[in-house]
Length: 111
Image (cartoon, rainbow, N blue to C red; front, side, top):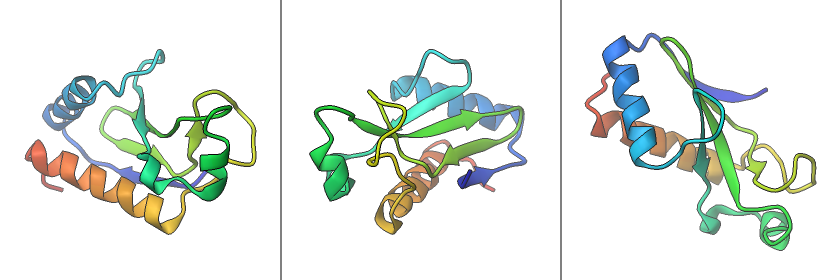
């Protein structure tokens, strides 16, 4: 699995991230797993075509004891397997990295 991984976060920083995820309503039914919605302007043509049957789309985020992992496999909300579920394009990847960098800056987390 390809992912964007940030480690060596302290407990205080982890609590800030968790709180921020909850405020942004990124929760999902599983503990320590979150869903970052992918804005439609970044959808591929196939994701746009499949939006009504498969979408919306999101990046899975996971929090561990002292780390944050963002999977680069874009998931669909309504299907587990489909051609529209693919690894992020360069533009989608850039969106994810910038989003995480902004999250860290907003919470004054310096790594």
